[in-house]
Every structure is written in C-alpha cells, then in structure tokens.
Length: 262
Ligand SMILES: Cc1cc2nc3c(=O)[nH]c(=O)nc-3n(C[C@H](O)[C@H](O)[C@H](O)COP(=O)(O)O)c2cc1C
Image 1 (tube, rainbow, N blue to C red):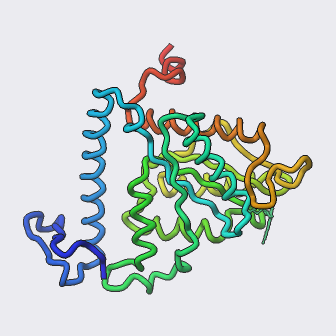
Image 2 (cartoon, protein in one colour):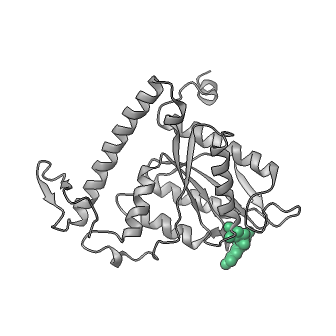
Image 3 (cartoon, rainbow, N blue to C red):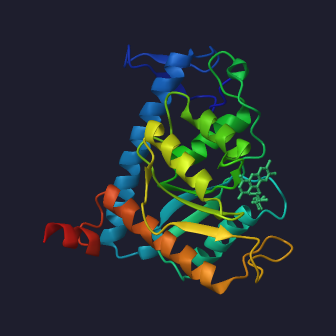
C-alpha cells in the first residue's frame, strides 16, 4: 500500500475534482499523477519560501538542498568519505548556502518491478524517491567497477527513474575515488545515463581522485585527509551551487552569465 496520512486524498488528472480515499489502493497511473502534482505544489511552495527568504536577507534559509549518494556500500568507502568531506565543507561554512544530506542507498532492494504492488513502491524505495524529489540538486560519489558505474548506484538510479522520473531537471555533480583514472570512466557512463534521465551535470571542475597513489588520500575509516583534494572538492560544490541557482533562475548576475552576455 502507498503510505499516505489517513485523510490524504489523491486527485487524478482525469477527474481533477474527484478524490480517492487511501483505503482504496490507487492505480499506478494515479500515483504518478499524485507525485507529479505534489512535486509541482512543492516547487511552488519552495519558490514562495525562497522569495521570502531573499526578501528577508536570510542566507541560511535559502540553502540549496543537495542529496548526496555514494555508489559504495563499504563501511570505509573512499567515495562515501568524499561525501562526508563535502558535508563538512558545507557545515563549516567553507561553502555557504548549501545543505548536503547523505542519502543512504543500502536499504534499497534490487530492482524488480514485481515489488511495485497495487501501484505502491516498497517503503524504502518510496522514501528514497521522496528524498530525491525534495532535493534541489544531486551529488554523486561514483566508484568505478569494471570501467562503469557501481551496481548499487545504478540500482538506486533505476528505482528513481521509473515514471515519473524524479531525476528530471535536477542539476548534479559527480566526484569519484578509485584506481588509476580515479573513477573517471564511471563518471562518463553516469553522464551518459543522465542524458536519458534529464539530469543536468556541471561540466567543470571534474573531480577524479586516485585513491591508491601515495601519499595516502584517505585514512583507514575512509575519511579524506588530502588537503589539495579537499580544495578541489570545494570547487565542485561551489560550481554545483552556482549552476543550481542558475537553473532555478536565482542568480542571473554570476560571472558565467556575465561572460556569456558580453
Ligand atoms: C568488482 C570490482 C571492480 C572494480 N573495477 C575497477 C575499475 O574498473 N577501475 C578502477 O579504477 N577501480 C576498480 N575497482 C576498484 C574500486 O574502484 C576501488 O576499490 C574503490 O576504492 C572502491 O570504492 P570505495 O572505496 O568507495 O568502496 C574495482 C573494484 C571491484 C570490487
């Protein structure tokens, strides 16, 4: 069953004034319409909220919400370490106006559309999709496995891509740590996947980190200990912030658009 508050009703696009009680399982079609309209309403609410925050000069309240996903489930994962470091950068104020939440993809079942019962996703999948819907932009930390995107990350991407594709229109950035190319080949496959999903990746700066070349880049817990890499990571976050604001139409006076208009 789709888990919605008891008094929630679902308005269908086919009959906009009719409401369905949650005691009757909605069809897959109705769920799609529901989440589309929830998403639109929430975007409108966000715009209103952000407008008010800007009017009140409260920079913290306008923070861009970033959902950060690591494609590695390993406890001491270097890629998850990159996400922790990004969160630290945002919390310490080194990168202002950005709030990064690590979205754990480990609870997701392996993709199997038979698990969508009576139009409802498994609870973990539904929760995951809602987190993506609620994010302004996405940060992928993408390990390279056999020259491509790691299976857990592809699994998460696929679950959230089922119509309505909740990735559509989101700005995104990729970072990776791995062998010789620092995970670069997974990044280029991820960019290709993003074409179909309508993800909008920042082009630069690119962030690849060879995790195995001395001196050590991570400690035994997978925490990033390399200062130069931390600085490069900061640049990625700044670029994602600028690009997100550009796509949301909030920052038309940034240096890139000024360059373009000259
Ligand atoms: C099945 C498998 C395939 C891998 N393939 C590649 C690869 O193609 N290129 C690469 O640079 N590293 C490869 N690696 C190494 C991982 O990228 C490396 O261990 C990385 O640290 C894993 O990310 P994590 O530390 O976030 O878990 C592979 C590892 C495994 C387990």
